[in-house]
Image (cartoon, rainbow, N blue to C red):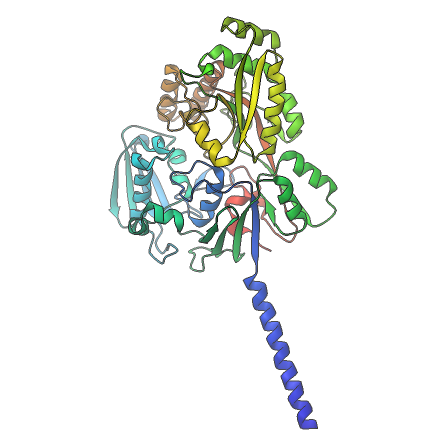
Length: 515
């Protein structure tokens, strides 16, 4: 009996240890961070994509050539660059690449991969909307396996901002082997997370890269789940089926914070972006007439829109560059509400009784839809019969880029830390210019070129301000507001305080998060 009892005790202990062991392994294997985003990335190719969802993904799959610190300064920390130098007054950039960094397929990352990534953006056949940022490159020269020399045709002090490869160095040998189509099906990088699979219409799954050259990610797996309806993602967050909701509408964020008793945490930061109305300014569009663009601008009451959707989580925009930056244009035309002026401009343009037109918005962004509906009522006061057209994200991007939308509601996130991309989209030769309705002004073109060649920072800020003042007189676009972003997340999740920063932002550094 004693023998049997001892055997039973041993079996019980072994079984108990097995259960504990299995439980420990289960906890590790099921540690999944679930992030809700409103739409599926347009394509799994950072070179040709133009949406922020693709940027979210690739910032965690890939490593940047150069990183930005909390003060908005360039740094080699957390980047593939060991060091860099700027020579010949800004015509030559030399990058020394860190040794020992591996791509997810085990191959070494070298200067040749950096060169290849530059060439991908420069390749017109790939159709990158970022192509023109790289047009000043005259020569790419490999000095050795880990040193790349970039020679520009002329001085360009904005080069590091616009040509930072969108935070992603790509694998040359792998892409040449599988082709760009193959890469989009299975993208790899050297970042803290590697791509596992995409489930169309549902989610994209990542897992941490065990051989990451820096500290490995703290959370084993990440799922980007697609929630076109914000209400659904918030319900999932409250039920802890989701851990983080990206781009939460301001009203939802404030309501959730107000009613929250437990289970959630909250954070905010001011974004380096602007929200605006774009016009199709092509010759065959009604808004090729600047007077009609000005009339719409004078008829819109941005303060009503802010109260409707954002409240204290927005700053009324004047010009494009946010108010915290020294290049902000406080003297640009703000187009304060003036219905009489709007009607006068309409009559001058030959439309004293108004006209019919359309305002396009992405259907997944309820804030933008609500704002469009409010604008519909506002411009009706001057006789404009405005139809609001809400389209799913991919279709919206295609229609607006091809000139199919007379007006459309846009948001632009600028390339940190320089404000250059806020104004570069207005340059006649910009890759973005046709995407945002086309705009041409010789003085603006000249000033933007001058910005690139002006080393003195104070003088450069003045040039930015002048560009904005001219473009606002032309209503190249109509600025609405600068956003303060609020994010809600699972209280079991820890997001380092330093990531709640304009120049960092939590979702671009998921490897720093932990449960």
